[in-house]
Length: 488
Figure (cartoon, one colour):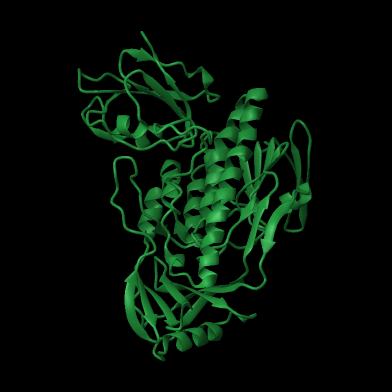
């Protein structure tokens, strides 16, 4: 049987999309040119909004178990300890934000967790399989794959290029990748052991006359390795001896011996945005659509949310093709490209601060992506509006057990959220056919099936709602419609 969707690229973006489609019953193939899975830390910062996505996809427990909170950074100047810093303030979970803090997990480990989840749906990554060519028409896409010296032609309904900054799919479409590559800036990155150092904290080693021009060693969960990072003035090798020379010179210590270098690279700022995200039945997502500086930890997270936005829309279009769902597919570019513009600006600003030696460059407040919204820019209402993230809230079910709204949202369905008992909603505006009703009531009488008590009012406050309001929560956890409900 031919797949309904082919995904080129098995990084976090492609894997997220494959999981989201597979759980909706969509036949999917995911291919990757590389013969072996990526083994480095690279995008190791997972933002709170990404943790919410992972909760819905069923991988959050594994991510939390295998990862760790951001470690404090011990700043050393001229070899002397001077202060402890955190990139962002620690926040306690709240009723509407259950995961308020970034989480650290090496990208290779995140990808492994996602591959394991995808395998539960009977789908495996086809490694060493290159997308060689494709042609699209009004009814689908014909894709040519190459693997083990064999050429295969496959027909699918849609093709998604999640194949990185050098995307074959984007280049074949002729879509401009607008932006800049700054050859004057280089960053040396690597994963390495430094057994002398306490692995529960991070380290910053620099000279007092240039405190922002130093070396970071941040602990990676699941072992003894640190992610090494330093700026470069010129081209550099990436071997262990190069990293060792930087550490010895900046730390002014000869007891920090590096070992077991498993991954290293020289990164150059490549800040670019695809002019379009869609060309008929072909889409771009993740680094194929936007590439970011590593400052702020935005790239991987933005790609994951591209996939989360696109998955349910592709499934809706496959289930019910027509003008309405085609317009829904158009909204993917409208919504996600605007987010990429904002996020690229944020990460570029942090990069500029880093280059200029601004101490604020280490601050990561405002990077958690919980405030991303697709609402109309002219709508300044303080209440929840279409396009806003749907907040969480604790509720009581008919059996007296505590449940959370996120528990009720979890899964491939959309949710009709109705506030009050003596009202009824009209979900006709939703393009999603699998719509489950959750009715939120107070404490007035015994609950019946489908009703939940918002006795403490957390949901009403988070949504700015009152009895007589209904809202559709999209499958990706954003509000799709808000209206006043007519009395029965």
